[in-house]
Image (cartoon, rainbow, N blue to C red; front, side, top):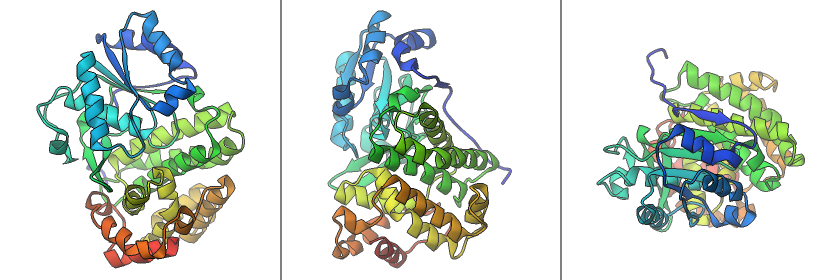
Length: 378
């Protein structure tokens, strides 16, 4: 427990409305002059990025925007963003959006200064050399990608591959709760539960769990669990939005050091095959993975039950999580997402490919176990 290593982003700036003066922040903190903004077309259409671009213009930072990021970004998306960075001669990368945009931004920052190609860096600690300065700005309270050294890419038709390396830690994470005001209920719910999963799996991780990650995970769960229903019911509640955003960041710091397990491992095939958003995928399998884990390792879930004032048993903690899902109105069954029972063997087989994640689970998961978990979730 007390021989451990803890890493995180160099700096985090938390301030309502700060993105409207992003240009000044970049000028004060970095010598770079040519930012590339990595985002998606949805955020461009909503105009959320307009104040950011205006602020860059005010301080004479010639910028370019790559807005081709999609959910579950493919290798082609990463390559297109990298090409845009080369064309612009970018010397700093700003990821603006959800986890997908930030994940792509991380990879572009690394590949801009590397002789490696994207497939060369899949896995753990495969990045060679440095990267461009990197700033990450989340617009949802969920992924925690702004403070993690992880990027996930969809390869081929369905498979997801991860890049895990300290080179992916940002120089600066910027949290502006104003960006999350009015976020649709379903997105607030899915991303919020995603963040809660990060906290839970960090706290129960088999590997690298430590007192710092535990403290962050517990505080994150208190903040997220105490605000998610209010944020969904009252989408312009600034207090709830701040709690969600900071809670998601703390959960990200926790699982960046004490990695996630089988909830994520079984969620990834749902996104790969059925394009279910990542947070919702996690929510669909969450109670069933935890019930499986609690059969042999109930203690950490009992701790979390007491923390949240939900009794003293793993079962009561799981029941509380189900009540949260019901309160925010998120789908709870695989069949509600168009997944057939006949698809379950394929999902179980694919889940076994997620060895990077499954090894962290507090209980070993076989393909037969995965099959039973998916059946329980169906």
